[in-house]
Length: 87
Ligand SMILES: [Zn+2]
Image 1 (cartoon, protein in one colour):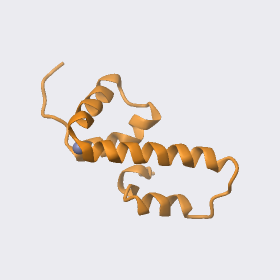
Image 2: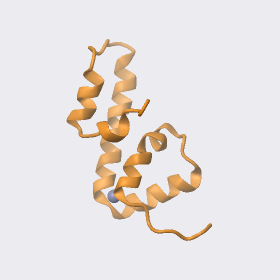
Image 3: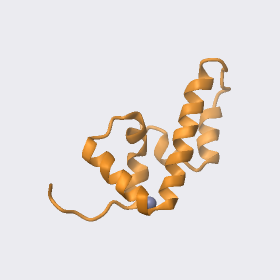
């Protein structure tokens, strides 16, 4: 593997959606995990985000979230920049 600069927090957060969805290549997952070992900030964000996504998926089945609730939730967590898909 070619050597490259360590991932920045911004890189981590940008890949977080794919990471949590399991869509990220294994080597990138490893880099994210390496980064998180040394970065409490990203650990907290990943932890919060994964819980939020978990709750979202598991409550969505039983509770109809009002329009925009998901966006407000992510926005409140300041996750909207990197969680909401750019579609
Ligand atoms: Zn970080």
